[in-house]
Length: 518
Image (cartoon, rainbow, N blue to C red; front, side, top):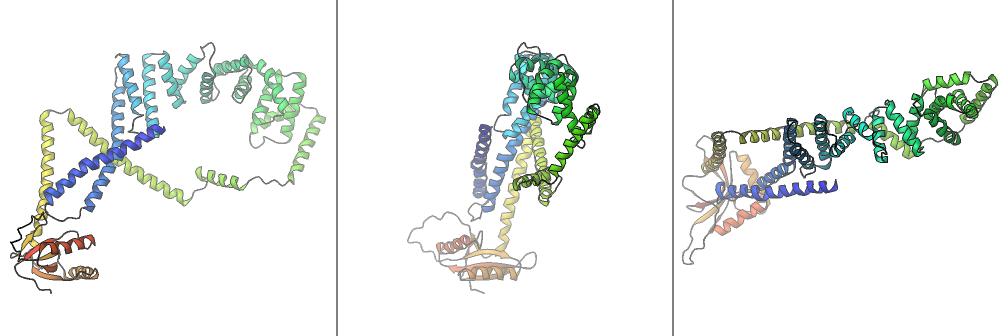
């Protein structure tokens, strides 16, 4: 369990890292070198989006892939031909069971899926009539995971009761089977009672079997009465199960034992010990009480009354503080008392289940689609591939068009200096051009004033607004900062504003003549 949990976490974290290094780096490279080439772009949102996508795919979708593979394999095994080779089928079932221990599944999920696989394997072995050692082992594993399935119970009972000397573990399995049948299997009760008598065992395991054997009057009921009565009378037990045993053992008890049993049963009736908890047992005790002599009945009634009055005024503190906390917790767990927290938690669990279920269904449908595509003709595969390439190129073209539409923010007499690598020029060439930094272009004066104030609050001077008429009507309010005699100075000021998170990107504008602030 611990090892599988470690694999689950380690492998999924590895998948996340691999996706970030490969797909994440590839997307960032394509965006910067193809679509944003030469531009200063704040890609924080893109990086976080890629990280989130990698985590969803690596942690959640990776598990859905395991569920899909398991479902496909199990569906294939349900359609197997019973006349097929056993070795191949057994190998497929074992591979499926081993797959549930892989890193695809959390230990709890793997245990649940392994139970399904073992049940299918056991049903296949039942259908083929195989009962060798390997089949018995699979039947046992399937039964332990679903004790209510009577098909596996019958097979286990048939094989274990035929053994000459079953082990204690095998007896425990038979006890589980008998418990699941509510002790209604008389031959199995007699078999277990005889085994316990042979081993001279009187424990919490054998006692209910002995009681049931005495009630059903199996072949060993007399031996059971002689074996159990001295032990129970020595311990002075008078609980429900013991009184029931006394009632069944009255006919088999020795005279001295019978008299003592009637005294105990009559006192339980006089005390009304079972009147509320088990009325049927109370009536049975009453029948024994009515057969006693009047004087003995009077003595038992006096004893019961004395015990009742003696305990009436006795002050007993039943619950400790820890008991009260446990009781409150049990009331909440069983639903007798409901809190707001449990209501909210139930709603949250339902919403989370719906979201995860819907996402899982989408992923599984996509996996089914990919699997179906693998079986299609080559022309269909090329058609789907071509459609995917077309949609990718169309999306890239749309992004490129949106970027180019930013050219409308510039006047016809001005040029844009895109951010790119600057090659050093010879010292003899003088740069007499003037530069400014354009940080934004908005459609209202209020937005422009707000950005100007934000820039001034950060001790950056020289910000001004250039009002330009738009081709579609209205005006552009272009916010620019400073006039500089070199690119390096302009870029330094712009980078400082990016670091202060005042802006995300900017343009270097070459002016024909120095601009005047307005």
